Image (cartoon, rainbow over all chains, first blue to last red; front, side, top):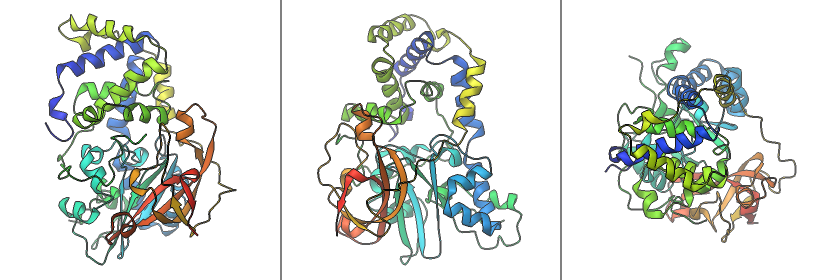
Length: 200
Length: 221
């Protein structure tokens, strides 16, 4: 079994889920298409491309960058970005000296409106347990080697505040259009476990 | 509740396993579970988290994220929506007798409800009230209370007793500890508090910020 148990889903789970859906539909608690619509929303509409658009805007528009760092919830609303699990979004900016990264040790809180649903590793006990205690080692394992002089700030999402990391604009991206910059901004760079792609 | 969910700082879990090009959902049943939570039973995040925290600790570690959700929704359908547990058992018995249980789930559509639901989840929620009477300003030193006794708390074990510095006051939020205990109207200021790794783990090298309700904290002078 993997850490997340994805390979171990037995037929019993499908039966439990089907029985629960039957009961909930019969009780009027959900409808078949409310489930379909929610799944479509988070599978196809809401995802890290939204956070990437906001980061790219911050890279090219200094006024927006300031608004994003000052009050991300309101700044994101300017771009039509917002929703559940984003009651208060706080943007934290990486600099030459400071690297930010996000975790939720108690469950798997994650800024859905800007990043969509979290990957399995973000929800797994190893990441949740270790990230607050030995983030430099975890980041290195995930391929992000930080200079020893860089201060790491880990944000444990214990309340209803959700964190968006604003990564550093990569070298060589000067003069690029906002849309092309957004394509450099990876999901992991906005969690703080990676860096943006380099311009090709 | 000092449950198994509170894993911050625990050791022995091994490496973080990353799946390349991971899909949003791995199985159809995960999609159904996720979608089912957007209902009257899943709307209360405190109650939902508490339902997961009450899982058997060994089962919690042995099951996946969406199995936790499944457990919580099964729990809350009974506790919060008043569905008799026998009804779930009966539905399982009925569906176990057919070759494809998923295909035997009744199909019932509510198009207007589906549209309204998507609009609701993609609309920015109203901001929290400003904490005009917050006890501590940014820069204040606070200590996390050593003893937090409640059925459901958002104060992890690894910061209890530790001293940190208030980085920001985030507004006034419902207190999860009170909400799960039946008092959903109790609200408190929430602070982002910064802790040095040295204070938490006895070794320097990073800082950890947590968002903590006022009653989790006390003055550290």
